[in-house]
Amino acid sequence: MQRIAVAGIQHETNTFSSMPTTMAHFIEADAWPGLTQGEAVLAAVAGANLPLAGAIAALEAAHLQALPLLWASANPSGRVEDVAFEALWTMFESALLKAGPLDGVYLDLHGALVTECYDDGDGEWLRRTRALLGDQIPIVASLDFHANVSPLMVNSASALVGYRSYPHVDMAQTGARAIALLQGLLSGELLHSAFIQLPFLISMPWQCSLIEPVAKLMRAAEQAESGDVVSVSFFPGFPLADVADGGPSLLAYAQSARLAEATVQSLAQKVLAAEPEFAGRLWLVDEALSYARQYAGEGKTIILADTCDNAGGGAGSDAAGMISDGLKMGMPAMVVGILCDPSTAQAAHAAGVGGVLSREIGQGRKAKGQWRVISLGSGQFAATGPFYAGCQMDLGPMACLQYQGLTVLVSSRKQQAADQAMFRHLGIEPSKVEVLALKSSVHFRADFGAIAAEILVVEADGDHVADLSRLQYRVCKRRPASRGT
Ligand SMILES: [Zn+2]
Image (cartoon, rainbow, N blue to C red; front, side, top):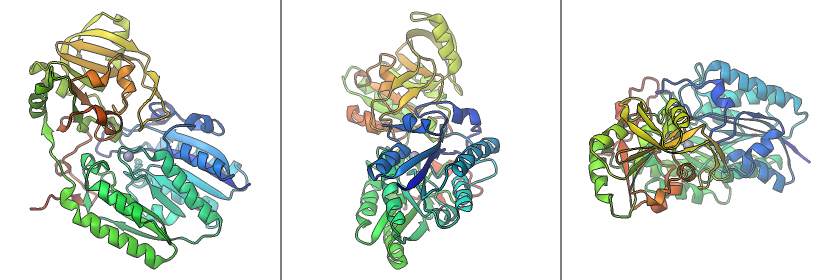
């Protein structure tokens, strides 16, 4: 039986965030498992919508032996500390060297990991892995939809493949697609790659694959995979990274270099032609709240996507400005989640259900009030939506607080509000809420989309900036996508 070493190292780094990512962030569990080594990785990821889980299942189905080395992920945040990156590399390297003879390696990488000293952390990881193993052993990796793919990554790996969906409901499936590529390489297939970086940055809310233009571009990439074209990926990229390789790219593998090149060139024309379509309305908070007010008493749900404070893109999910404005405007029937505020969660647990906390909650423009504790939770529960499918959440102590017309769900660890179980854990049924403010950009649509009569993308406070023209790029030479004239 052929022996395949497998590992997952996942981080999306927002270089505009001043919150460093430390080893402690990789060690703790959140929506995804905490740091896990060796055989325990199999149980930690089994059944989850994670590339590594899909890859392991595909290896089993193909009668290939999976040798699990490491799982390490941390919520998106600022640059990964060098000491954490090197500690993770040492764990991986020593496990790889101890694994015995190998026929191949599969890596579940994000593709937008940035450390204090490496702007292309994934490229460095792949470079070192290739240097250890030599040129003969195939190394394949799956990458996130938001990967900032670099020439170093492409040249170091035998093959790379990206998710097709945002919300990422196909993560496990992408792991399986990577294993299909690996099987071809193991059987002696020779793949030629072609890679193009595109000249503009795409803001996160307009990268959603449920809407145009990404829906049609992803369909085109998928349809281009036929005959001798073995794999085609369109990576919209992660624009909140000021790195040389930040931005969208196209990558194809085919039986001939000419065919691979023709495939990416043809898709590049389609992406370039779609540039003015990567846009939509960003609502100011007061405009959005005034508009949403009409939903009170209507029995329908409007969702306000608080995109800038999305923990899933490196923000703190602790900004309270929208809550303060909601109080000021006397918003009725509004629920906000998930606000990361560990000290408030702790105070709520000390006060107990029915207790009243006279305090300011959140950060930035803090929300002052007499907050009544409606319910409490351990923060440990199973996700039920398609994006976090199969995941066991561990968000630390949680609380549901109410003051005037506002209900706020508070957690001790930040996590993107992308699963209805996060609300039900504290007794809130999202479909019964008339104005629902979610700290998420796009992933919420997988589980909440069906209950929303309307969705507004709101520009409030936070490091997950939606209007890219507000950012000062120093290293990245690409410009924000233009709507044209
Ligand atoms: Zn992503």
